[in-house]
Image 1 (tube, rainbow, N blue to C red):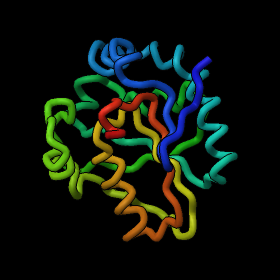
Image 2 (cartoon, rainbow, N blue to C red; image 1 turned 135 degrees about the vertical axis):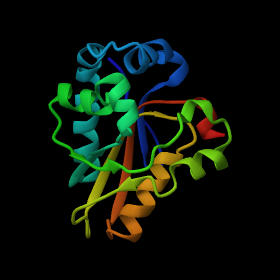
Image 3 (cartoon, rainbow, N blue to C red; image 1 turned 60 degrees about the vertical axis):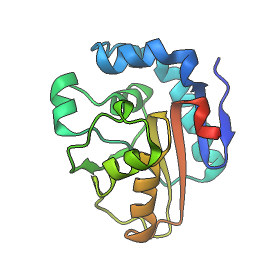
Length: 169
């Protein structure tokens, strides 16, 4: 069983290097069925986070329309669906470049700036944002900023299937 790890408000299951092939196949080789194999671990981790952090709302990281057309699914949504987790979707309104092709943290931040549209009342809520991989945290930071500044969310916590080790440096 995978151990849930924590660094500040970020919870995660694996280091990216440990599950790189699995995630690559899931995202880029149309192996949607992988979500079923990972769902048990994701479900247990999220249930623990929801209790520990008193989470009110869970949000998945959206992919843009072109990625959705290429893959036919959003890998984060698939993980959550297979895990039986109730979640809300937000929109990616900017056609961003592939993050894995951008090495610089500053360029990643620029890539996702104003990329999301969030609708709903998050006032005073604790929100859990779920992503598959955290590299620099640019996507999470952008959504966190919008939720806190525009939607007055009280607290934001994050969960990722995997985190690259460099994130902690």
